Image 1 (cartoon, one colour):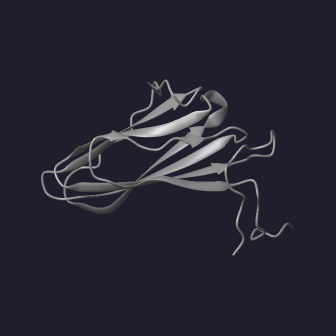
Image 2: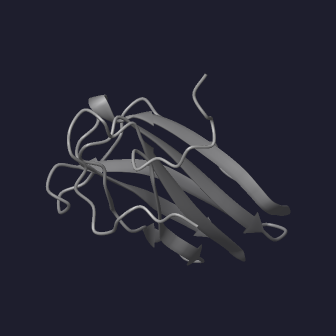
Length: 132
């Protein structure tokens, strides 16, 4: 039986969005070489506040369009460290992904992308896996 705790260079975590407090676009993530992505959107909202997000994709990291058929539920008022996850099949997506945010009131959000299953083609990333 394989060791389930073996480190793998087939996964990569990126955190391009930290403490998003205003409406706008998050940082982009290059998904080339990976088959799956799990995006965790974490938000804290005050009363009468919310965070809405849409997943966008691009082939050139310049021209962006919303991913059709995907609705990410809005994170409503008075939530503390509320996590909304999105599981993405990258074989059906363009090379780059990012989140577009609509923030109302006093709210903050962070996003983490976990890219997985990079064994079919060589991943192109700006950093190497780290073992601790």
